[in-house]
Length: 290
Image (cartoon, rainbow, N blue to C red):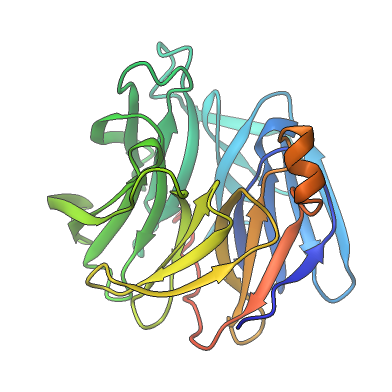
């Protein structure tokens, strides 16, 4: 049984999008509902953060510049460095006032794929978008409730994402040269009532790790979609995983702290940043091209 540890004992409202910077050996992550981008140094235990005026949902480091590409309620922006001002790029959902961005990841060519969430969830109002290296956006999928779990296979030929309220993870053939995705199929359908797939990461063997929101565990799926491993967690609502450490064998897990009082009594580590050592390393995170 894997030993789950507390990497950072905080009470994030909605911890999400952990991203390991292999150059700086730092973990960046967000607290969506606190409007914060965090920077955590595992060696010192120090955690800094920037607070914005709106939700920051997901982000990517950049290939040729300092700073980040960020996806916020108001669309895509550049953040050129820590504590610098946002530079707006585009907002493909400007007319969808109830939507906000939620989860995303870059492909190996440096495009950003990010999906949105439609919080009322009374109809399928969320979408999946691609921000190209020319800063133009393309809609890749629509008719979603909560786009989540973006990830790529090690050979970059398969793209995964989930629709969390539907308990389903999809996989698509992905053409890295063009950025097109085709032949979508169900990768794994989780049963209702015991956790639903949230954020994810793919390891070097091509296995897909997902956090099961309200399921108190993370799950490793084979490239064929079979459950290979489950790790129980001391929280009810894990949200996403990321591989970090010098050998990329430390799996960091963000969690939710804004939960009912009774649940917080049962799970006092809710909102903490957790970690667990795994046997198979992850992949270096792709960065946005610009």
